[in-house]
Length: 112
Image: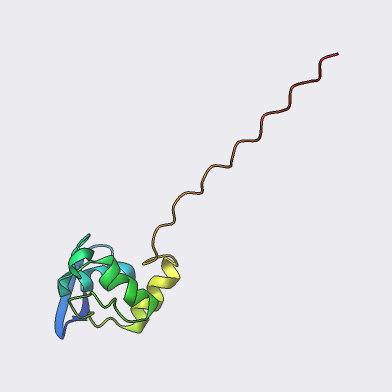
């Protein structure tokens, strides 16, 4: 059985078909961004998948001024469903916590 999802990307209809398990809402956002021309890691040219497309869609605000491709149209229901399923999707990964500073060495015992 094929499942058909329709997303609007840059005014064009994008169809994503997948056999078996249905494509999730976050994957639909990624597919819409890729179909619109955004590329993983291409943020320096204004076509970055995450920085120029996924992040602005998930945050609901505008694109960076350096973005070169308009955002695809993604249903607010898809964004809401993605946030419910993966609350941190579209957020930068947090760096691991820095190790605690070592304790100061103990003072030597006084000599008697």
